Structure formats: C-alpha cells, structure tokens
Image (cartoon, rainbow, N blue to C red; front, top):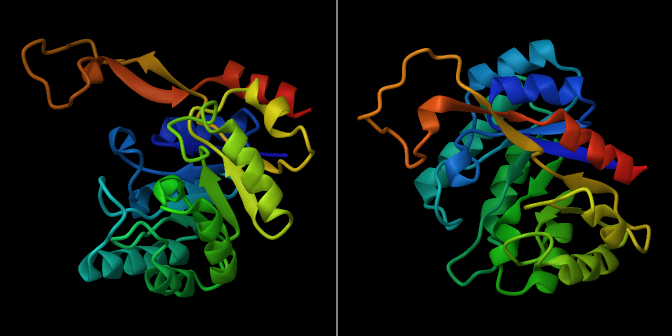
Amino acid sequence: MVLEAPVFTIEAALLAEQFGVHRIELCSDFGEGGETPSAGALLYLKEKLRIPIFVMIRPRGGDFVYTPDELEVMKRDIQILKSFGADGFVFGLLDQDGHVDREACKVLIEAAEGSPCTFHRAFDICRNKKEAIETLISLGFKRILTSGGKNTVAEGMTNILSYLEQAGERIIIMPGGGSKPEHIPLLNEENMLKEIHASCKSYRQSESKFVHTDVRLSKEPKAFERVLTIDKHLVEAFFKKMG
C-alpha cells in the first residue's frame, strides 16, 4: 500500500522521504487547499529526493470552473514542470453544471504527455460521482483523490467503499482529506485499498526571535510563530496500520 503525503513546505518534503513516505504531492498555499508550487521548489527537491513528486496544478483557490486563460496557464505549468522533472500531476476541472470538464481535462492530460494524472478532490463536489468515475477512467486518469463526497474521509467512508468497488482495477481510488491511521482497516475491509493520502501535518515553532504583535498578513493568528511540517509519529502510525 502506498502512502502519499501532500506537502506545502520544503522542510515537509525533505522530511517526508526521510520518514519513509512513498510519494509526495507538492503544493503551495495550504490555506487554499493547495495551488501550483514554484518551479524552483520542484527543481530543488528533484535534486534532493528519490521518491516520486506529483505536482498540484491549480492556478488559484476557489472553484474548479476555469476560464480559457486559466486553462492555458495550467497547460503551460504542466509543460514547464514536466521539463523540470515532475513525476506526475494533480488537477481537477469541472463544468458549470458540476460535471467533469472532459475537454479541459483532455488538454491537460495531453500536456502531461504520458505522466500519470490524479483527479483531485474536485471529484467530491461533482454532481454525480458514479458517472464521474467512469468519465475519469475513459479520460485516462490513473487515480482519484476523494473524501467520499464529504468533508472528511471519516464522514465519507461508506461512499469511498462503494467507489472502490465500482472502480475495481480500472482506476485507483485514493482516500484523502482528514485521513487517520485508524481509517485504514475500515477502508481496506475488502482488500481493495491500494493508496492512502495523508498530510501527517504538524507545526513547529518559528526560529524567529522577533514577533511583531500588531501586524497580521495572514488569516492565521499565529502565522508568524509557526512553520508547517510533517509529523514522524503520524507517518509511523500509518505504516503500522498499513502492515
């Protein structure tokens, strides 16, 4: 079973490999749920890491209905990041009616030129999940990241199990979104679970010796005081349940 960790900092990416994570999803902007990271971050990590690096392709936060201009940027990001060594790509595009945007997805899959593509949690707000699974299989996606159409894996557990059954061997259903080690035995009761997506995130205290108490540049009240990283003990807890 594969453990994929979304990472939002260089520190978390480096530690993820050190702690045994099999693959990372490289993102920026944790507050928005992930956006396209910098080319510099990917280049640096490709020099340092041996594990695969899948890259989030998302030009902004908010919805997943993109303009032609945004789609062109996403296409160029894939082309650039592929040339810098990205091992795979993660994106999700919907039409105005809540269905998978087939034509837009085709553009990005073609830009990926054979690199594996994951359809992210835009899937969870699709109008019809069963239909979406068949569409994504036909488009050539390798996996779907999902919390079961709910806010967390715990809430969407029953739905995830039905997606695993529907997908079979045709596409990987990768649970993610509030994943916890204790979810694994429940998700794998039919021995169909192949991959799990979990941030195993934690925060460490900032090394800054000065904190300006009157200025906030983030919605997070303690943004200047802590750094997002990854928790070794959580990673180990996942591996223990994965067997």
